[in-house]
Length: 123
Image (cartoon, rainbow, N blue to C red; front, side, top):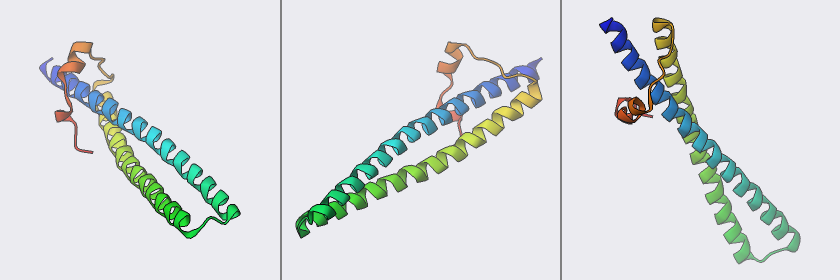
């Protein structure tokens, strides 16, 4: 019985890690959507500037804004890649506990609050 209790405790920690990883991915999905919107808005401004034949100082600002926007999208995508790998790892750990126990223990709210990210592997 003690072995199952230890496995259950570790499974609850794995579930907590999975939930944290999922929340991270969801947050980054929102950031990616915002970065994509910013890029689309920038592209619209570039098209307008090209149509209107905007002067050199305006073009310089557009180029700088574009570089910043593209760099932000790249950063978010890189973070998303890492977060997705962490989510996959957390899922595999949780699935292993499910295989071993035959179920996933559902923690009470106090158990979830007691477990913190210190038990989760680094992202």
